[in-house]
Structures are given as C-alpha cells and as structure tokens.
Image (cartoon, rainbow, N blue to C red; front, side):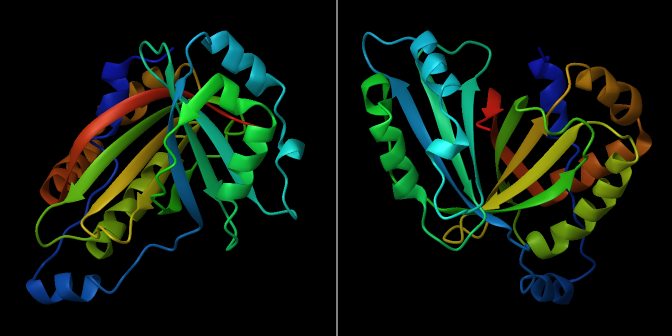
Length: 244
C-alpha cells in the first residue's frame, strides 16, 4: 500500500527545536506536553493452530458495545507489522479518562474468546500521549498505516525546546490538506526518550508528501533541526485499524 522507503522519510522531517543559550534550555525543562490520553501497547502472538483469518474473524465481530464501560472514552487499535506478518501483532489501548480501564478491557476480550486465539504480554508500561497534528481530511478511515518511532533527545534538549518546531511544522503540514496524524507519547520514568507515531490515511499519501513537502526547502530545515535535537533509534511500519 505504502512504500516503506517513502514513509521512513517522514520520520526525518517531523520534529525540531533550537536553543540560544543554557538558561533557555533550563527554563524549557519546566514545560511538559499537554497530555490528552494514556496508552498501553500489548505485544501478542497467535496460538498454535490459529491463523490471521481466525483473528480477523474475531475482530470483525468485535464492536465497541462489547467493551463499553460507563461511557469511558477510549480507542482500541490493532497493529500488524509490515511488510510480512505471520503470527504477531500489537493491541494498543488509548484511554482518554482518569479511570484504569485496561484490566476491564482485557477481561472483556478474554470473555469473548480472545485467549483461545492469541496470547499477549501484559507487562504494564503506561505511556502518556498528545495529538500533535491531525488533518481531518478522511482521518476517520478505520484502516490506515502507522509508523512508530522510538526516539531520544540529544544532550541538553527536551520537549520545551522541541515544541517550537512542532508548532512550526504543524502550521506548514496543515496547509497541505493531507490525511495525516502525528502523536507524541512519553513514559514519565524515562524523560529523555519519547515515541513519535505517524498515522497515514490515504493510499496516495507518498505522492502527496513527495510533491508538497519532501522537496520543500522548509522540510530540509526542519530535518536539520530535528537531527540537532533528537535521534530516532528505530522505526517500524504497521498495517493498522481502529475497532469501531
């Protein structure tokens, strides 16, 4: 659907920051993201004797009403690694409330028969997230491609300096009117690291990015600033969908 080579280029142009002196950097340490949700990622593997067809059949019959709890707002996304996935996938739960709903959702999945199909690692690592950019055009499509990057700030840099370039990038990318969303996730126990997620909602996204952004001089400047302030350890691409 999407070229991994093209999508990986996106990771080089999304985030940046700059600082004029040490005092500015120290002041920026006090600035934190405006977290909108918490998130959990559960790595799962199909049990012996079960295939993706079994999983897809299970998921196709799973609807939000099966998992509702006191009108708590949340999203459940399922990620399948690209380019080839055989028996592994990831379940992501985004919780927009202050209630701990993870055990409840996992219990409901189990009651529906999920445990017969697959097993998951339920080591809890709570992340806190913020939507940095969401162009609303066709973004409601439940099927999309997601690129997940694990990144670290370079010495002396942090979200406080980072946010300025994010705002600049957001203004530029919104003007392109493309179906795209960016998320920032952070584990408070590891202040120097973060996760950046690119969600891509259109088949022709690569051509739009090439034509309107990759070759834009502004993109090159953002890329340079990002490399100055942070580095990404790895990038993985998934076919993803939202349980509606």
